[in-house]
Image (cartoon, rainbow, N blue to C red):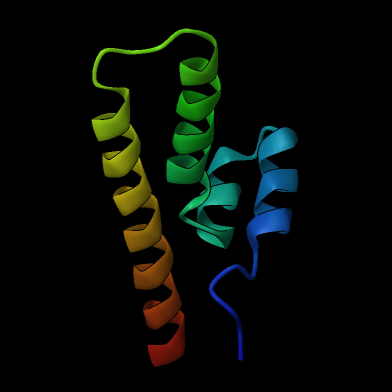
Length: 76
């Protein structure tokens, strides 16, 4: 049985090789997680006005994508 994080490293490797669609198919949460970590890094250097709210929304989006993908794999 796969865990909710299975495929993350392979997806990151595919992404680093420029295979964007294959990375998404491997682990759909790679893009929301990338957005979240990019925003957290940017917010660390320059504070955004609504940084906390943006962080919460991106976190919810990432967790939702991970859980939807996990349950989808379970049902297959």
